[in-house]
Amino acid sequence: MFRLKEVVATLLPLVVAISISGAAVDVLHRLFAKYRSVFTIPENSSTALEVLRSGKVISPLALEGLHLIGNSFSKLRDYHARGVRLVTLTHNCANFYADSALVDLPAGGVAAAQPY
Figure 1 (tube, one colour):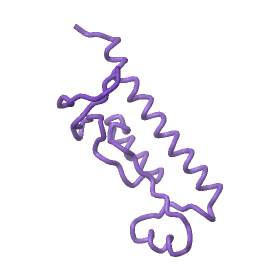
Figure 2 (tube, helix red, strand yellow):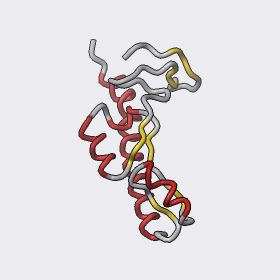
Figure 3 (spheres, helix red, strand yellow):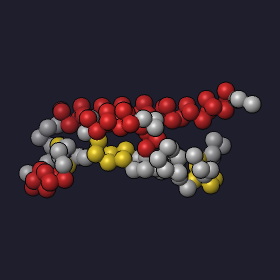
Figure 4 (cartoon, one colour):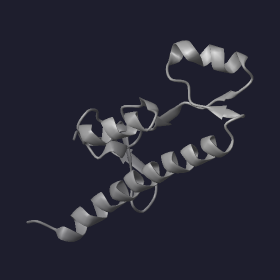
């Protein structure tokens, strides 16, 4: 039987995490723009050493877990266009691309994750 309450309880944290990660990238871009003399996002790994030698702080953007793209390649392309260059497969949240070893329990603690 379909249980809407369980589905919402499962998906709501994911929706919130996706929203927060997008907002975090926005905040970082505003900081980088305000403090251009301090921070920079290297275009690629070849320019990172050059930037570091110039005295700036290298600030590559990364996401912890592909669940933050909501299983959407278009969201991944969006993050890439906004400067994100690293995304881990999973942390404690299974997704279309990888299973996690553990899952956080709503009441606290962790348990072995079931395959996606």
